[in-house]
Length: 222
Length: 222
DNA sequence: GAAAACCTGACACCGACCTGACACCATTCA
DNA sequence: TGAATGGTGTCAGGTCGGTGTCAGGTTTTC
Image (cartoon, rainbow over all chains, first blue to last red):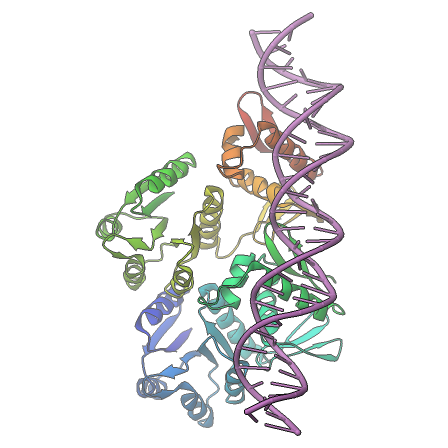
């Protein structure tokens, strides 16, 4: 597979590149919009990894132009920890998925695989499992047809858990992913959000299992 | 396995080294970035344990350079608790995991195993042997298709034994692995946990053999 | 046969976890 | 500008389950 990475942060770009090469992908790197446009005009890519904040403009303008030119290359947005509204904006512009920085490389790889798979079989970003329909990009969830409003934190927590269903997340890890560095949050906050999310998931077949001393795990009671 | 430990704190380095050697690993020790770079250039390592705060610079510059040189040696970051932001940033730079100081050696060992396993088997973490299916990441075990709930300590004990099947573990060694220094635990505790794990493994072909005066060993009665 | 090593059922304890209530802050609306 | 609303994290009190110890039994060793 051939990827195009559009990212101005050099270190991060190198890190991603070397990771992707390990998976056997060819990856080309543009560090601004001008370069990115030039790359796209000359080469065919299977996937584009696109940063939003770039020195010569907003990545979304690139995305818009790209979609306007009728190319259906899947695009994954790399975005800093942000509000849901940003995500929705990107979705409307035709992004296939997004990853918030900082991210695990394992997570990024998983997303890439998912998007490529999706493109092959062309379905959508919505996750359907265990009696719920979850659209992380739009920030909506429906349990047994009933629409449920999730708040920002609940949303991201569910997203984390659902993307690695069956895996144990320690409170430490959840805290790292859910909150930013500077806000020093007690472990109890995690417990509270787990509780709130549990309540939302109650009518579904998804259950959050507590593993004392280890962490939490999202299970499907089917 | 051959590890490189980059850590300037001498006592801690010694402690880690001796621990790792107990596992049969070869470990080499660099106490600054310059040495570390020299080591990496001359030798091949299966895993690098990297401290962030070093006398001649930031461990992340090393990590950066390492990744840039297209080496895929897994790296685990050792970071103090106060440097929370380092943890996250490191993942972006291509670290495979991080451990916050102070840490249990048991925990560090578990992380090392997990990372190595991930590297080796491409996220194939599930272990199938002797009629059981063991997934340490999910914290689940199934014996003959029947799911069995393991508790924290039982899980870690099984993980230890199964990763070195056929090897003898003395009670002392097991105690060191399962507990941290400060909690002073009687040898009987080990006996108890061995008993509990035995009960779980009963329907399988795995048996924990007692070697009087020596320790325990996990065997496959096929 | 005695001592050492090990096994095991029972039990009490402590800390991990849960949860309802609340104070705080930002945003929106009158 | 002030009031209202809604999301967020803390707190305190309570529950409960994993945990390690103990005592008494069994097995092995010399």
